[in-house]
Length: 349
Image 1 (cartoon, rainbow, N blue to C red):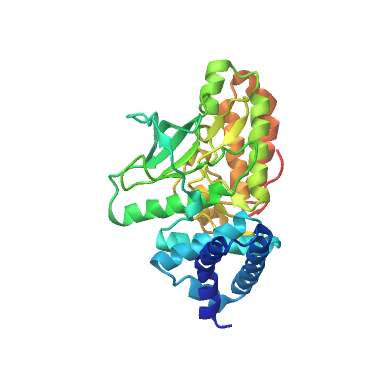
Image 2 (tube, rainbow, N blue to C red):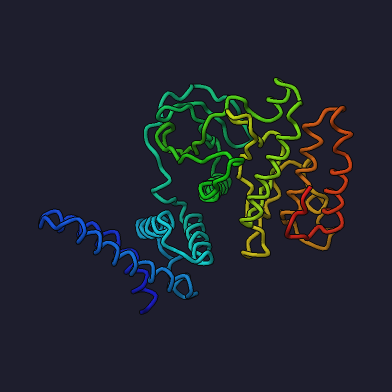
């Protein structure tokens, strides 16, 4: 099949499925007949997508899609991923990467990410950052946090932040771990002409606030949980990129959760991608990020630079009584990064 016919067949699948369900309803077909037809269609669709993922010309054709065509393709592939029809890990990885490329280039997100029913948003933000604010609201029976992009940005800067929003939403949505802040969805109703990422509201706030409020008796437990969350990201070839105390939250079970994946990216050793924007917090940056010219390389966040940031977090959350018990471990962490700045795999601390 030509690239055009493959892409067209994938995009037509949603329309054909709707027609099938309408005809089945009108004819009163039995459920098992409809399910068998849908299953056959899904198997054919998966085969088409796999052939597209293994063909560079077809991939290039997909990346030229625009407007509703791009949205349709994104939704179809996201549905396949959500249902777990791509059995081979390499195919799932390629499909997610393709969706990210198309989403970022067209500033569109899978429809499955959007939620409705967010209400009770507070008038003023509870927290604020460089380009966004955090509002408290309600969704269903839970209190949630809305991460909202501010309106004052214009032109190229606005587009850059929108791309960052798309990238963070797509990456964060696929993360599922006890020590990663859960992603609920995207709300487009609370603010006119703007999007918000929705996550659970954690009353304990950041790990720094929690330790100031409750003391540092559990600091070792919390650091161990941070390390587990970081190891989960690295095992999926993801670099956090901005690990620090203000991006670590404490949930209702008194456990640490990593948050804020706006600077996250993929370790380039496996995907050919890298997080290269020089934004971030200098106090937590590894030497090879602060002065890449001295390390024979370009600015590139890696699992090793995350490990360095973790060492800085250990200092950040420890008081003078705890500091001594950590200094040998911290020294080992920084030695790993300083001697092997281009390491693609962090060493356990």
